[in-house]
Image (cartoon, rainbow over the protein chains, first blue to last red):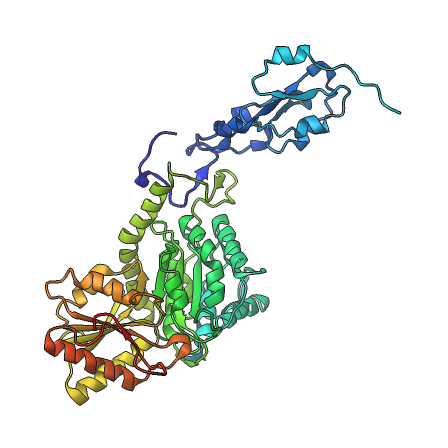
Length: 134
Length: 409
């Protein structure tokens, strides 16, 4: 954010979601990346992604688009379009692992890996289908 | 459509009912409250007016004073005209949220019916709660009698809600002496009172869905200082002129004149009492009597606006005084009283620095009589004639046991 003086703020420690001169009238049908988010909005800030120790990696061919991960993600960091899972928003994901926990496929379509892991490497060592124990 | 209330030109109201009528006439949208003695009837009467159709609004019963002010903060940020009332322990529980309200620049009106702080538990009036709020970033208006609780109660909305000010406002009155004692009150008609205030004009309201806003964001060492600096700047520079403007406008519709510093017989005064609350009236009577009886040139300065503190106005009023008694109705618990510190900080800027004495009085509702106030004027006169302070700096008035005094003996 640009450096501003004490006399440059609206009173009240108010942060506006959108750029000041822009109004959003059809928010429900506007994709997040097309909204005029302000610099102070959390969408524009990725500071919190640094909290992550492990990250979820997504393997598309196993996914059944059940949307469980999208529903349960506490930070809206699962990107989904037209009810199809697209991937993970690593700018905002904090690595809590809930998406992996709720994923119902076998093997899971989302798995946690250490932060430094390359995606291709992770996909190459994805586990096999587990046999259900009786 | 709300019902209009037919009021007589003179009503017999106590300070609480007077304050409640100011909330009704302001058509407050939300009162979020946890009633506490002696302020209970203010919110109770608002609820009654609401139930009987005299107000269009919402009365929120919550689980504590912390929640009461939190509810007010939410409602005010959402864009409503908001008020509540409290006292003493309840005020203390509100303190954390008072800072939230002022930091978020929400023009909430809080009626504080002043009451002592436990322990020992006590429901009677002193200024401990008022003093507790003085660094909280609110505007603090003080009434000396019931009529003023009503008048200031109306004016508080107009001052705080101004978009150049945008600060919460406390209206103080003394517990029981003002809040529970009925006097003749001259109210405005509902129409005149409401048109004086006008409709509440929301400012960056949270319920403006086209322009969503986050209130009370977290800032650390990077931005916190700038926000606090702005709030202090606005308190120091924007409030006085607005208060004066509102006082002048109110005088036109009510005939009652209010001033930021209410000086009385100060034109030629050599000795002065500085006080707040109902004691200001008692001190005025004592000053009149002592002028007639003893020829002591006594005057009284009542602090109408405690925060922001009217430094320049008080400096001017006290420029020729020889001895000053600051009357603090709150135990300073280990130093001189707040008024003593504040006034001393003012008078050292004057060419003639007067003798300063500090009187602690009236804790937990203990009476201060006209005779005691005359005695203070007499003591001050000794210092004035000597050209320096005679006797200790701080003295307790009307406390049992041997004389209790401190400092500068």
